[in-house]
Length: 169
Image 1 (cartoon, rainbow, N blue to C red):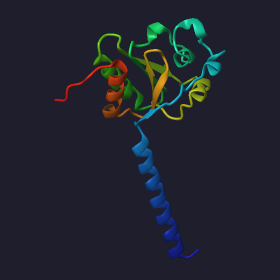
Image 2 (image 1 turned 135 degrees about the vertical axis):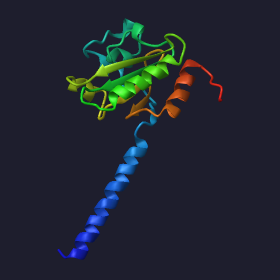
Image 3 (image 1 turned 180 degrees about the vertical axis):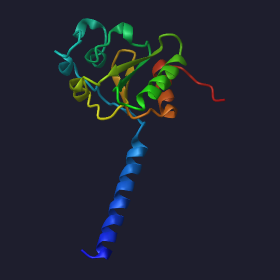
Image 4 (image 1 turned 90 degrees about the vertical axis):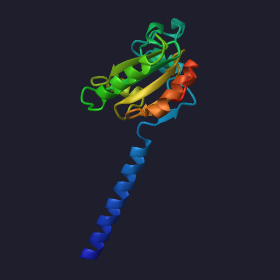
């Protein structure tokens, strides 16, 4: 291969990987609405910690092993983390602060460690940590966030779930 072809191939590779990186960065942290439940009741049957249909919570919360007492009245932020995730502690702190902005028990934050639980990571399609699921008051998944959540997108979603209005300052 001559030098000209090698330089062109290197330039194409550099441009391609830069474009891919920019696309992935633009998608990271975005609130992605879920049009259907991430976990169906049939998926939840037999999963560890699942209480069945009479637990009083949606199939998603049930499959996560959450009881009605674990859920917020309006929304629950379920964060998947691992021990080796460098962004997870900051994300947990950020989500706790967002949950604390609402009235008591209106929004809750729950953190689930997937370090030694590959089965749960596969069941919930967690490909990166942090990954956050936003559950409504009944325990159904309404949105999914891969990466550190963008608060300017998360707060309006929580406001709609809790029926809270913000006054712009």
